[in-house]
Amino acid sequence: MSNKMRAIMCRGPFDYRLEEASIPNAGPNEVVIKIKACGVCASDIKCYTGAPLFWGDENRKPYVETPVVAGHEFIGEVVELGEGSSEKYGLQIGDIAIAEQIVPCWKCRYCNTGKYWLCQVHNIYGFQPIVNGGMADYMKFPAGSLVHKVPTNMPFTNGAMIEPLACSIHAVQRGNIEFGDVVVVAGAGTLGLGMIGTAKLKNPGILIAIDLISKRLDIAKKLGADITINPSEVNAVEKVLDLTDGYGCDVYIEATGHPTAVEQGLHMIRKAGTFVEFSVMREPVTVDWTIIGDTKELNIHGSHLGPYTYPLAIDYIHSGAIDVSHIVTHQLPLEEYLTAFDMVQKANDSIKVQLVP
Image (cartoon, rainbow, N blue to C red; front, side, top):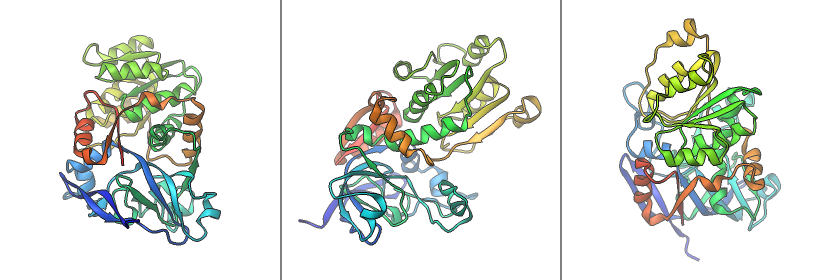
């Protein structure tokens, strides 16, 4: 067996290459998987196109370290188990497994207080070489990874949706939705649609999806949205105010990645409402903070990654409670990674695009 594999290597903005790399080996408490599918995330595209959040500017240090194998939405078959890893993770050769997207240091203040997803070191698969990602034939889960076994009968298409759904679940948890609440999810992309499916399980009074693409709103309805709004056709703020006797929605979750959706939410939400900011913005966003404080006394909750939600995501997908098959629209071979990137960037006919080695 050759010890070489294919990998999509990030070397800089607009410089991703399909290269030959060495297949990783599993050391103590490490796992090597053969990749079955890996999703292309909007954050991958922001990194690819040179967003300062990833590459740095005068206000921040670069987050990405190159060269690094891209990809953090992966699923794969266990092909090698290092010493102690079978006992630690409950895995055998041939099992299907996933790792959470962050590999915590387990030493910093956040890790020591249970907030591992906010780890000060913050190694995320696909952005630092110490945690090479899943856009390859094989990848390694280093020691310290959070590894989960996945049912063998779960389609790989759905299995690669575990990571984004885990993030969606956490965002909905941050919304503190109560019975009868009017909940708005802005953005019906992969993450927003996962939030729609998850929020529906909380039994809100009215669940509203907002997006500029009608096809995505159709899927939002399938996943539980009661009302859909296309801001290019109607005034979204006025529509929500009309539905709520002028008060506004109780919970607003921003998942578009566009600055206008932040301002929209501030005008759409009621006083003392809960605003959840999830998106990875390409550029800094400026809004009127007086609305947050003096005008409405809002609860502003950030949402990052999917802490403690992977078991829920696996269960919801496996049981059919959330049908993620509606979200995956395209699967392409590794060789067509640039086509996949272009599809995600344009977002015309695609939602979740996956690469399949």
